[in-house]
Image 1 (spheres, rainbow, N blue to C red):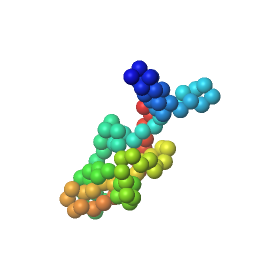
Image 2: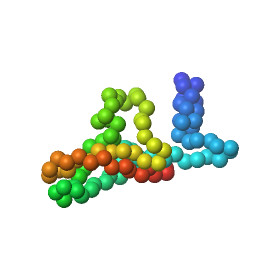
Image 3: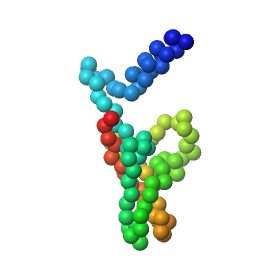
Length: 98
């Protein structure tokens, strides 16, 4: 059991931060995907409120939780839907350092 716990901490340290020439670079994450905040937008067509419906990858690909996320290092593409007219819009959300 002790070795399993040590291995868990090793993996967490290895994959949570990037080590570059002795300097630790903090990882960037999407604030919406990681529930650090939420965003709403005004609809371009009717002026209604647009709410997040998830990442764009989940709409275009057969996605399961164990598949890697295909996005850029600095932003994450999300789909927003208008609550009034059901208009969909793709929005790039800037990732934040944690």
